[in-house]
Length: 263
Image (cartoon, rainbow, N blue to C red; front, side):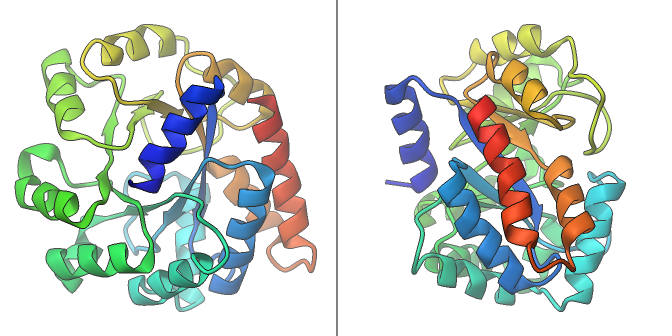
């Protein structure tokens, strides 16, 4: 069974909520990405999202844009990242999702990329700019490879389209809890409860809520509405701050541990 599906089933059985952590791959370099992933696994992270560096990350706010730039500058490419995931699999079975823009997959070839990702030990793809209306061939290839195709639902998603997305997704639904791009926010959106209730009417899939969650207190609050909380920019910001420090991994892992404990 897919590691994402297994993880959410185990969380449900234990009566616990999950923590999905996003970091930019290759920021500050791929060895740090590997060491952070291992530390996150020990800290209680449920799913690791690795942002594949891209020159035009249109869904991302400044913090994650800069992480993508640092990843590009460190020489991180999709094949090198997949080699890092394969190295991670020698020591950890933490579920891994690649947060990626379609251009990178298209350049390599959809069938080849999915095959290579599965072989490396990736569990799912979140393709930011591939709508389900245009992804029939992609979804078939993902199913054949045993990978989860994860889709986004936003506060502005009409209910009819929400139903379509919910039927086509697998693994979990990523609910974008606010309009706009990724980034830290002073408070969580006040529409989360109503929107997650709407999504639940269309799917039994777990709902992971993200965009703007930046503190243990916010994570605890958001966790009451979904099966998991996604935290990205707040962690990426820590990596930016401590990226050149010898204690980068323990510093960032300590913050992630505080989020996992709060949830």
